Structures are given as C-alpha cells and as structure tokens.
Image: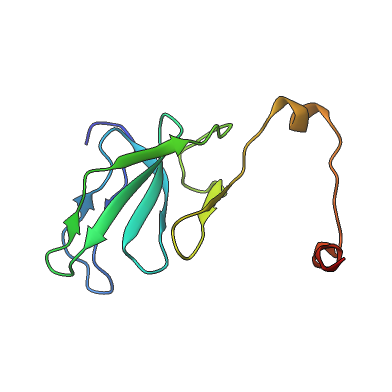
Length: 119
C-alpha cells in the first residue's frame, strides 16, 4: 500500500484476490453496463478507461486516459457523490463540473423539458 487511493476489482459473490486497476491513483469507478469497460477518475482529473475481458482469469488492459474532466474536487471517492456517469454503450458521459459562470450566475431550471422538444 503506497498511501494513494487506488481502484481495485474483486470477484463477487465469492470473493477472491483483488486486482489493482489504477496505476497512479483513482476514485469513483463505474462499470460500463455490459461489463466490458471500467471507468474511473484519475487523481489528475482525467477520465480513465480499462478494457475488461474474460471471466477467470480476468484480463485488464492498462488504463487509458480519455479526456480531462475539469471536476472541481475529486475527494476520496468514498462517501462523496458521483461526479460522472456513463451511457449504456460507454460512448458518452455526463460530468458534473463547476465553472466560474456556474458559481456566480443564476441557476435556470426547466420543467417539463421533453414537451419543449416536441415543438
């Protein structure tokens, strides 16, 4: 243990040995719904992806940086709210970021927005 928060995987429901996924720290792991990729936030704020294949043994690719997320604070990732989520196909992400405009400007809430799309 090097004191850095890392991302690990472990079998379930019968736990086996855990395997480290991240290399230089990571928080907030999220599985792609089909289980073929694992995403996490690197401690530098980059969204990382690891390709997963096989069952036993599990094959993991080296982590690949996808893009910088500009998240405000990564925190420990434990007990904090998720700052991103991934679509079922693993191709798009929703990321909660803070900008100067958001910190100083008004918040606009649009109710019943699906009806506006029909117009």
